[in-house]
Image 1 (cartoon, helix red, strand yellow):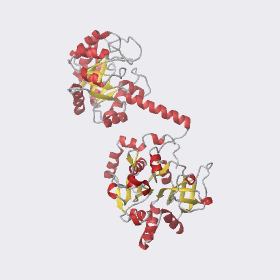
Image 2 (tube, one colour):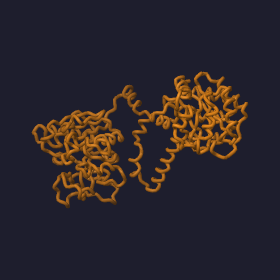
Image 3 (cartoon, one colour):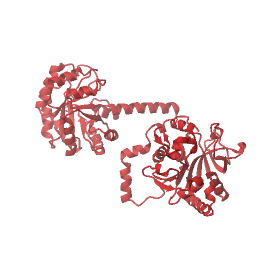
Image 4 (cartoon, helix red, strand yellow):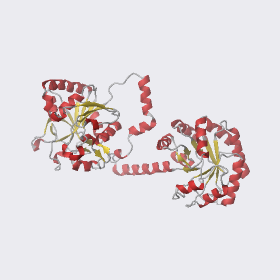
Length: 543
């Protein structure tokens, strides 16, 4: 029994003004409703049965409903009012139902005056109704059985649904109220609220009135508020919207036989983990388990201004230029989070005070105006442990690209686009690469190794462009740190570009694996790129 939840539901039912309950049919939908700001939930019989693939005709047993409700009540702090159909039997079943609901932390139950097994109110005409005295006895039995005085029993009047008219609806509601019902749920399947408003006008304020405006959904909510309705239930809309999305996704996957145009349009697996409470478990693991080694980290090189963007970077670095209302770097951080990278270091320089994001470690390159990328890279490597993903701070990319890099066992692995070398739009600095094998679209395994990186390769030797992503293993990180120590000590690192760093690694006999990726990334260099970046992520978004 959870008195705080029963008291919260009673407050929702009895307070002045209009309140709302959101349908939930499992723990996940309950968490979604709670995060959206709803104060209470409606355990819809239609939605719960649909989620199990059965009809809303008591085809789920009441014990199966109880088992599902336990997950719902455990998932959230807000109360749930269960759609209890007819009470799953006679007065004795009702007594046992109330007691079992209390043990599961359910705050209340609504029962309807129809016959068991029930039929959904919107199916068929002239459905038979329960005997008034028998239904009153069921309400009394439920109230006598409850251990928590705040547990609520809502009597659902189906007279209007069955076509028995306003007088019969009022007669039944009055009898149920006198039998001990804490609220009356009056139901109608007309497309206008006329029956509901007429009932409320005659009923007055004898007890709270609950409505379910599924069929008269075009009615302005202010009408219900002015009429003195206590609670509006959005009865099945999370289930129905989820079904729409599932049908669309299933049809697209069946048609296209690929995840490429799906994966970045749906919530990430990390978001599912978040809703499931993975963060709390990770915190518990830090308290109770030995520390884990080898969690992936990211290093973002974002010290430059990006002069080509003109006024956009007068007061901020390029990495903080907004793309469709959100800074470029923030978009990159979301991608990192979606693939499990939580430890991110950003090397900042130009207008460093404007580069502030939460949960981020910063390294300052105060000599950014007179140094190149290598200097920022080697400053940023201090304190990192592998594996590490290094990224330019002005690049957008879909998450499958770094995922592929992390799948490599090589100490160094970079992503190269074989198509971007033919991009006529771009005429600035480009990291062109020559590999030991070119990309071939017929070959599934497109792994190659870097031979040289430069801006001035002869056209016949260009196999693509490095897109600004480098993955290093723990061993590769230590090798690069060693190289950096040497180059920083001699001062050579101050003028080196990333292409020079790779050539230095190759000169020391290190192998750099290349993974070919065709598009699905964007280097934001100029205003043309800023416009393109606003639509980044769609199908066929190539560099």
